[in-house]
Length: 156
Image (cartoon, rainbow, N blue to C red; front, side):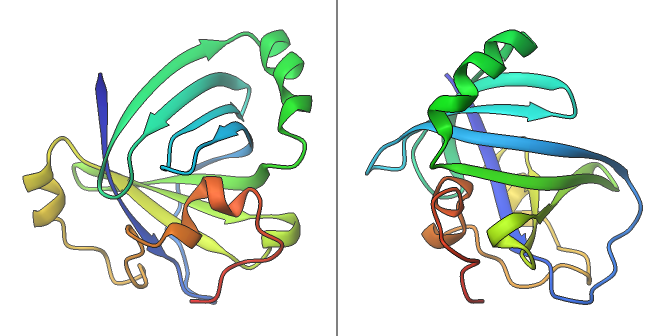
């Protein structure tokens, strides 16, 4: 099993985000379990994948496999009521990267930043840059799977 060790933060309105490579993301959920488990498909700037995650919080189980564009398009209709559309910017932060998502559609106005870590000690030692807002790693209403079915952005 692969582990994802990740912290998530809000990016405040009006806060400038440093430059980085940017691409559009279509992400849809095939299954969202009551225990936080999920199966999703993602088209990230033309790179398509199927991902299964289990668990909640800082450390989660994660399995990802590439999909051909045709496979992604065949599965995409099954996600009709559980999708997020966003622009993703990858910003270097020393030996880490921040993945900054600017959401579109009904979630317009929401921006989040996620940072992945090699281990829990690395995650605990991380000092967020000044342009990060409050940490929301443990907020269920700000998980992408929950946002995919939300009528509007959650309140900070």
